[in-house]
Image (cartoon, rainbow, N blue to C red):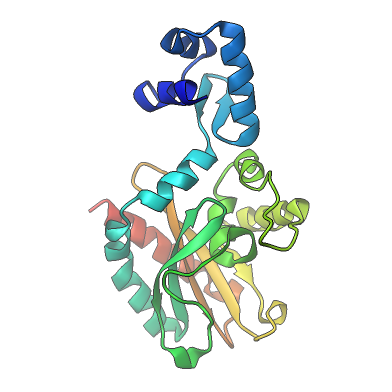
Length: 231
């Protein structure tokens, strides 16, 4: 399996079965069996041109990446959004099946129980819904294919229904105050890098917010961060 994955680390973005067999010098039947298992586990992805690295690889890579450029691009936008809405604003990135909070603007008096550096399940927060909704459904399935022993069981069908609603709302994920025991409403939108890849998401949260009303502001702020990443 390591030899097969190494072929993708050193070769083009997409490889055919024959490409991988030639690179590894393994029998074609053996390569096919290994690739099929890697696709099922989310390490590789299959589309008509061939095979490419899958979502689990990128989840691990996210843990090692330097997010300083993203934080620098998002900082002024988060502050401006906080001042305009009076809400707590967040910046988060997907790491595996979790969202890690990179930044938070808003004091402790706001009562939003988030913290920089904290991780939470991507399936249970608006930041996660915004990122997951921007991914192909099969990538989401691969991320949550195995149950998390440290978390309550996840209803994947319910998650997909929520992600469908997010896509229908132009990619903005919302959570009404009635859904939260603390009465906190929130909205989030994904951030796209200049090359079109998802780099993270931003959100606004607080009491008294109308998530659907502020959705255009959140979406516009996420686009501005993407533009700032492009210099």
